[in-house]
Length: 566
Ligand SMILES: Nc1nc2c(ncn2[C@@H]2O[C@H](COP(=O)(O)OP(=O)(O)OP(=O)(O)O)[C@@H](O)[C@H]2O)c(=O)[nH]1
Ligand SMILES: [Mg+2]
Image (cartoon, rainbow, N blue to C red; front, side):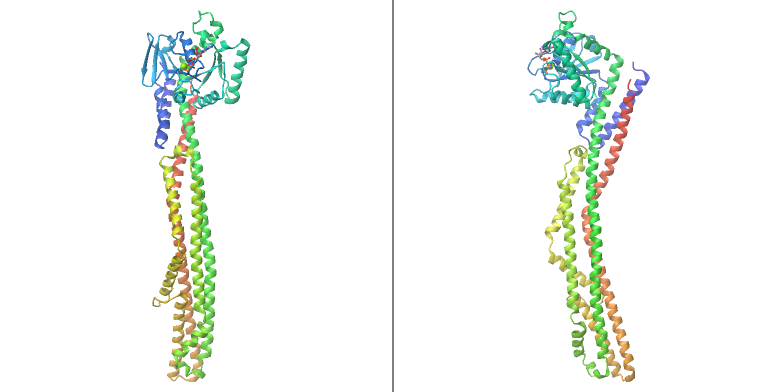
């Protein structure tokens, strides 16, 4: 019976609804939301649902009885209607329970096209009534909101109506029990409710002041005029003609999908904000690591210069010493290597080993401290971020992500803290010292086992001096012309210079390499600890952006469908 454009609209609607549902299902959305979308699709094949809501005792059941013209539903001053009650056409009056629903049949023409739904009242002490009604509201094609003239438009009614509106429903307000008011008061109350709704909820509702009680006996009854039921009745017939019903029916699932979709767009936005804050922490740690690296390098260069100076000074003293020693006047001493060695150590070597050892030890302590300092700062930032967690809206979207994120943050915090707890300055400094020593030993081709950096250096310088003085002595022994001695001295000094220079450069390279390796190791350890968190946050950011974009495209399609409604 539908015309072609309407059929096409219906098809398009089903497609978009299906896509929204699938998108949410893929995102591990709340199962209740997915189910609600499914229900909205199914309800497209169901008869029109005119749903009557309102606080308990406002006269919802009485209103339906008046509309039907017979007491088919129970009324009462206490919370009366306990289950969703569907009133539909039947050739004779029937009533049966169908699971949680009550099905009432009645021979009334209107019911051939419209199912009238009576709901349990809200705001009763029976909270489950409210829950039942809230759950059913999304399925309504048109909502009649019944408020009672003896307490019109309460705060809880405002809140309830606002919730109904978020589902994109058309809401019509029925002000019942006007028989309790004088004629002037009725207009006053109508204005009061209408203004209140407009001011607080931003829409101007259709409003019908009625008395269900006076209307019950029907148009032939004595109080029909006083019941003011006629306008409402004709409004219902007019609005619910075939075209009107279709338009409302098609709009219902759009409202459901829009409402759920908007919730998830908001959740996605909150989640993205949370991920951005996560990334900000990661970036801040990263910047800090870079600054740490630069500081360390600058400081190390300074310390290396100090080593260089010490070696320079010693080398200069060595040249001086050779100048003084490689002379004919001391020719006898040249054959007393033991004496020369002692002299060399006293004059040339002097306190060089201690100075080198001190610099080396200071540097090692400093590096170990810096590494610890960075870990401490990383730990603090991670702990702070963990403390900031717990985004309710994001959790709606979180699925397993929020769990993974928390788990990763926790294990990252754990790693960082255990680095701090297990930290043993002495042990780490010793380890580092021994690896520096090994590197230097390797670089200077000495046997391992020398005690400190200074001692290693001295072993080399000492042997250079011994070689040089030894050679000089050998020349003398070999009867080289005495006039050649100054030249031999020059050669010996040059040789000494070359050897110490070589030592110096090897030592510097070894120290520098060892330092770079150590710094890299320290940085890498932190980066490795951060990596899984970093990866998770980035991939989740991509996924969430994709989801949110797809969802917004679908929301736009829903809006377009809405514009095409008849
Ligand atoms: N004075 C007056 N009383 C009415 C009118 N309509 C209903 N009542 C009475 O108000 C009481 C509540 O009516 P119900 O129809 O049971 O109200 P309800 O909204 O269905 O209540 P619940 O099912 O509990 O949510 C009953 O005692 C009715 O007789 C009316 O127009 N005027
Ligand atoms: Mg009732």
